[in-house]
Image (cartoon, rainbow, N blue to C red; front, side, top):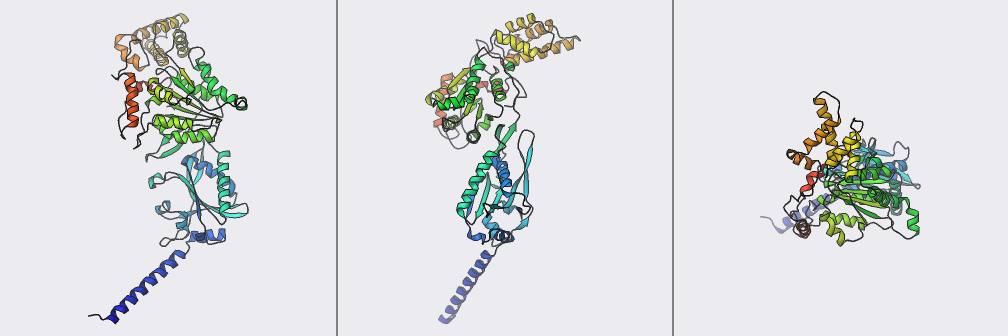
Length: 505
């Protein structure tokens, strides 16, 4: 049995062990890793004593940051080093690389990744590495890393160490300025996609369309009105600003599927060489925040939102309709922002109340109706191309194809050529009229509908009145998360308006 003296001895020994463990832990924490030693050599002080300044970046801006930091690093071959180790480095901060109780982080190879800089060009960028920079005569350390959504890191990041904290702030301001000046995004046509982890996978570069005004077959004055509002305002920027007028504008193109809304947008992009454009459609409209930021940063710019009526609700736990987020993004830009929002819809009635309740977001609504006889004749001639059909036969076919669109005209020409090939001859007027008769039969009714044909007796196949659909969509916006929203039956018709190679698809 222990007496009081034994108990006192045991308590004293326990205190000794606790003290020894604390000293050992302190010594471990104070021991710099090989990475820490290299940074102390560069900074001239113990890096553990310097606060870390962190700058998060959208991952599609990493290439801009890489260009800016390359310019600031200069040609010094020792100005860029990597960190060796296992996947734990992707979870660790720069402070842990400097001094760690268990892992001796050491110098290793720099990690790189290929990033697009245009539709056909790429750049090798640092996705994980340390930059040792001299800025304004003082040493700075930057840990540059790309996003790692598989490890829970959805953004790119710069972690900065500088003895003078004011210098760190000045340094990051210079990096941001260079990222805008040297950006690979400016003047490009971009789209946004999501990664398999649900995070923003960044911008995709698209080729700028080469759609001339002759390629767009609309009623007289329609294309000119849209071009004057989207392009003309930008061209008269100085005069408008001098008169105290705003540059920000919103355009809504509405009408049945296949009538030329997408072609109109392609022509706008063709007319605005050097203007930054962001194209969003379908699920990518969820990236409206990133698109608005790109548009704001790289003016003059255009943001295109295709088939916006099909956007009913975000696919997360927020009950706010994505349409309202789009309108908020438009409203959040300053009036002197040279940014045009161009939206298309096949069901304007679904949007009308939301737009009317927030006046000023859209200042031009243009109907793109089914082509009339003059437009159908031009469409038939356009798609006939070099085929040997007479003007009389084309005019007869156009007159008999009321309610059809460019997709119908394109299919008609293909069937005419096919019919001629099957009989072993060259296409003739008879082949054209035979193909037209075949497409206009009762058994081809669904085919005509899928080609965009509309008749005066067509009804809403959803079984719900348009006004009910609008009401239902707004109720859904106020309801519980995941509350269903009706998608118009015409969604299937919006798969393709004019061309399978559309850069907007």
